[in-house]
Amino acid sequence: MPGAKREAEGEEVFEFDCPACGKHIVGEAARCPSCGTEFVIEEVPVIECPSCGAINLDRKRLR
Image (tube, rainbow, N blue to C red):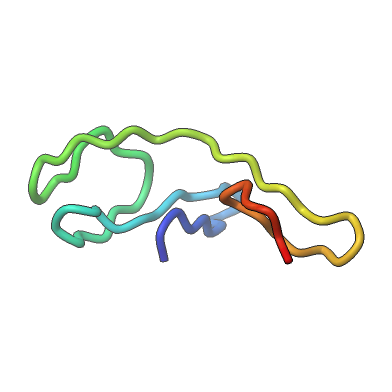
């Protein structure tokens, strides 16, 4: 699950799959340990509709 966060002993742990080779990575990493691809990790705002609670991660208009 790309960009998934899970909790481990009360702390959030970031995990994702390398987009180049598919290696599962736990924690924030600057490079893939398998293929060496460099990552840019940035915060993405989560926008929640106040009426229905829908989540919009890509800032496109919800229908």
